[in-house]
Length: 380
Image (cartoon, rainbow, N blue to C red; front, side):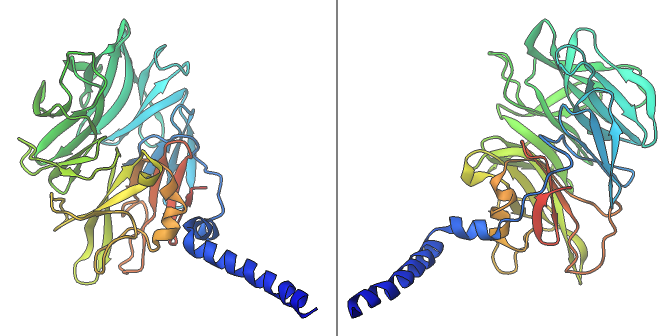
């Protein structure tokens, strides 16, 4: 009798102990407990890059028919008149790559939007399909493919006031980015050229032609970080140049980088708002998704910069998130293809160490996300 009673009392204790041990030994249970309730993203699928123009942020669903502009408080839709392939901002114009029929190899053109209306000018090519567009300074560059041979790539330029696209160079790998700084204008190309054409890497634009400054590197993104041209490869190498004439040996991170990059600022009572981190999109194996943080020194990256996951920084080292586990249970499960800390002007920066400007992140398939009030979730 006593034995049976003890067995009945012991069973709940054993089950409770098993659950307790499971939760402590397997982080899956804990991650589920802190994972935010999923929201339906307003901008679905695979968003394009993000453009800041006239104190607004522009982004679209890639191959969707609508562009969205963020005014600082709400998202306003803008019909694009075709499937959107990419966007770029130069001067007072937003340049939009559009596929009218929805097929990138059927027809392609570049449209202009001045923040209020579509301009009458449209730019297209008879023998090429436009595949990508990037802005650097006053120039818009387009990566194009020859319609008669899709392995033949070229780069076209749309200069200020130009009436048509003009070829800059051919025989290169696909265009993957553009950056402008006091050092000049730089373009990057990545893997995908026809066999026997090695020209992939970083090139300096002189006004009419390109000069290689780094070759044989599969560059997937390039950005100016306070006077340092910074570029990343898909294999995880991060290149820096403060001269623009050469790129020394890279920082090897060992993870797959997507090319997404954004400077992240924080407020210091002694120095005000300062560039503290470079955020870099990651995507590959399930353990290297989300994004990573590179600590800046004096607002600039170096080969000795610390490189870590959000929330894993040491004492005194900044991070873009408050809680590592909440990040890992949310955005940390998705590849990040584009990322942007919303700049001052779009939202009003408050001189307060506790104020966190929103961060937007474009995932590869799960729409646009945002970091607000200490939590990553889909942007509604």
